[in-house]
Each structure stands twice: as C-alpha cells, then as structure tokens.
Length: 147
Image 1 (cartoon, rainbow, N blue to C red):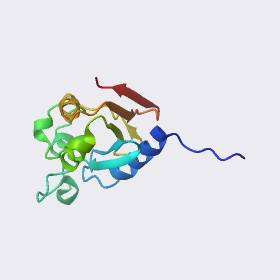
Image 2: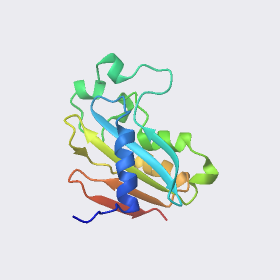
Image 3: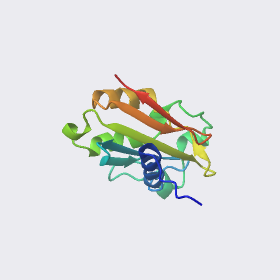
Image 4: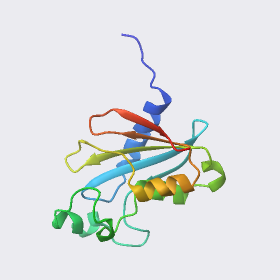
C-alpha cells in the first residue's frame, strides 16, 4: 500500500484535534491552531480563564444543566473559546495573514461543528487572520477566506 502524506490542512486539523484534548469543558472540547507559512504561531483550547476553576474540576456545566442549545447563552459559560485563547497567546505580528485551524469533539467523542461563533469570527478578523479552516461534524474540512 502506498504511503499517503496528509495535506497541510489535514495535518494542522489533526494538531487542532490534539490541542482539543487539553480542553477543560465537559460539554464540548475545541482546539485551535494558528499557522503562518506552515509554521505554528499559537494554539488554544476552550476552558476557564487562567486561575479560575473550570467545569472539569467542578464537575458541572451551567449551560448543560439548563439544557441550553449549542451557540446560545454564552454569557452563562465560564470558558474562553479555543480561538480566543489562540489569539490571546499569539504574537500580533505573526498572526497577520495567518490561518486558524479549528477542531472539536462532542461529549461522546464524535466530531463537533468547528464553525466559529460570531464573537470569535470578529476576533479572528480583528487579529487580521486571512483564513479559517475547520472540521465539521461529518469529518469534512471547510476553508473560508476572511477578507
């Protein structure tokens, strides 16, 4: 059988999946990787702000307890999104014209929809990233240009 080398998008989505394994969210685990010129600039995963207790430690999730659908009532969530953490952790100069890769998992370890929320989209645009690449629930990879 011939060896199949992954494309750059496949490669960085796989890394985003590994980054998601560090998430401290009970409900969904996301990882984000910011890449420029095929070099990783920054990573981030979703979880409570530094120094705060997180859902894994508390073994509770307010949004899950209230059965709030995905994408709604984020103000009830303690977590900082993976995309936000990757942007916070990165150098502004290196992020300009970079690509962000996003992958996530549901509580049952199936793929979660990696489409960034509206707030994260604004942050991605404000950080001057040029492209978003994310994993969908069916395992397909979507690529969007920002500008």
